[in-house]
Amino acid sequence: MTMEYTDRLTRVEPSATLAISALATELENEGADVVDLSVGEPDFPTPENIVRAGKDAMDAGHTGYTTSAGILELREAIADKLAADGLDHDTDEIIVTPGAKQALYEIVQALVGEGDEVVLLDPAWVSYEAMVKMAGGELTRVDLSESDFQLEPALDDLAEAVSDETELLIVNSPSNPTGAVYSDDALEGVRDLAVEHDVTVISDEIYKEITYGVEPTSLGTLEGMADRTVTVNGFSKAYSMTGWRLGYFAGPEDLIDQAGKLHSHSVSSAVNFVQHAGVEALENTETAVEQMVEAFEERRDLVVDLLEDHDVDVAVPEGAFYMMLPVDEECEALRTSEDGSGDEPRPVDQAWCEGALEDAHVATVPGSAFGTPGYARISYAASEERLTEGIERLADEGYL
Ligand SMILES: Cc1ncc(COP(=O)(O)O)c(C=O)c1O
Image 1 (tube, rainbow, N blue to C red):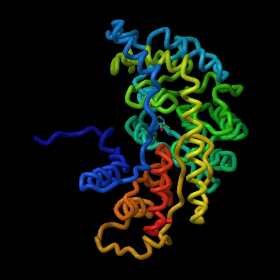
Image 2: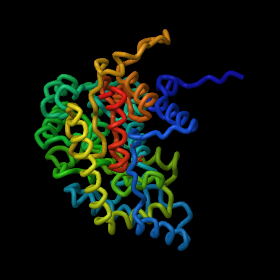
Image 3: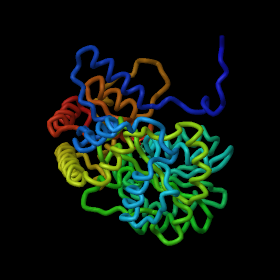
Image 4: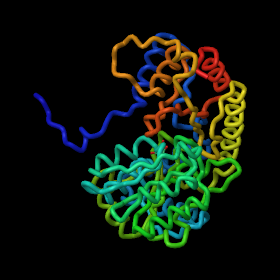
């Protein structure tokens, strides 16, 4: 039988990163030692106290359904965390989700309808595009690659992109994939446009706790933004809890009520005992988070130095654990490679990433997956030894 699939799915492409991970797995299965710099998760275990709290919660019988929006104790802890960031939200303005991804999905479903315009800052995390397209929205993209991925110099371009037709703007600072942290002036520029054109803004702050010497401002704290900002955060990155699936969003009560319908009719709630572990994460994990962030900062410096040794300049990230490596066909490996496949020409970053994986056994993600060809995303959530090995291999094989 041939099934007929909905437009909402057929207009979405499978993730471009899949081709790279499929190739990496294939190589590993053949016995290759692949240095994986493509991963989007910390390489640290979940801190022990959080694991213990999860186990204790299971033992204590916290294994049934919870209130759809999440247990009150966790929403109170989240409200306290948000208040510390300057955001004022009651517990009934917060929904706890199985991961920040689900939070983003619910917000987009609540706000974006057929033909609605959504503005993204490129390079942008891969799933924003898919979520908007599944909701029937249209994308307008603003390229930040000419300004070292900073938003402030690109505010004029953003002003051209945002209009009264714009429904939603998605801001992600610190950014995946660039690691850029947007300045207060940039965020104020966003605020001015959002207020002028009556636009709702998602502030995806999932990397907010992972920064190096800068203190990112939450968009919702700016004057005029409280009633038009939906703040998204989660536990995956700061607490190394990717597989636990725990996140949340906070916003105006009306939006929470509407999105709450989708939440209750789809996931019901986040997992009960995981929510209890989340309380522990927010309340008692400061030192472990600090240690992890310190390690990331050292690795960032290491990678920037190693690349500099090979005359490669990158925009130095101030947050998250990614950086964008400029790649072009001038690198020795691509100049000398023969593309005899007869296939359609691929963007240079895809050729670079596939070549780097095949020849150097180093996995990275092509920038075109984030809307910005000409770069490869490196994740430095790997040990210093593996990072050094990866960069040296790329250099030896002519990719730097
Ligand atoms: C920018 C950004 N937002 C949201 C997410 C979703 O994270 P999770 O669903 O694991 O909480 C990710 C994960 O990679 C991300 O990079």
